[in-house]
Image 1: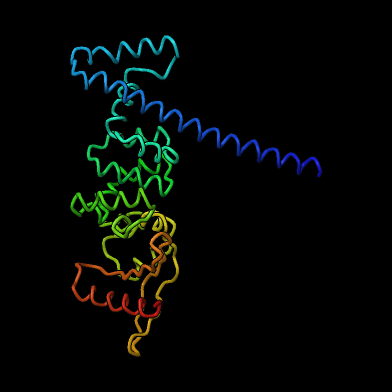
Image 2 (image 1 turned 180 degrees about the vertical axis):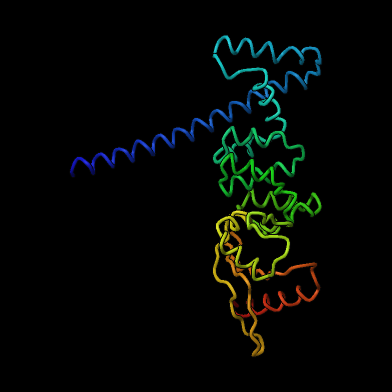
Length: 274
């Protein structure tokens, strides 16, 4: 083995070890912060000593700072407390922290609604979002735009538990209403073909807006139904759903006949695949 090949092998070993150590350190710190928050919560809330609760964080911060240095400010301890309140189940925290860093959790903790918070946590885990991506998803109100957010709370909870336990994603967690297509740069007046052309020009951005798992397959895909030719504007495949996704672009208000047309195509594809 020459020196260059040996160097490359050793470099790979170093990089892999660094990466695994970083993951282990992050998981350890996240669990530590949760445990600290849980312990503070027990002291402050379970004992129901309000005056003591007002004093404990600044006092604790000063003592920890004197012994361990920076990183133990009153604000940081308050975040740890909120962390343990937002995620009370240690098993869920242990599952999430394999993919989510402490910085991820700091984005999730301020969310007020538990189901909203659980949605972002599980989607972040399964789609491996960066902290920046998670922040953008929250700012764009992704949860509020998904079909699942329109369902009763019990249904939302059941689907999120299924995602957590089986890593099985449902269509209601994938599809959104509305989609934000400002990046296409279309003016006030345009045709359906203009919309289609713009999507293909900005396909990468369009796929990002659609979400993880979509793969583009074809435009103007010809389908025959009873010797008549029909064309699907855009055809995608979703890897997690393991389904073909047909997009028929329309301008203006939705009409009942559009649903009938897509149902005919759906039945045709089902018959062909069965």
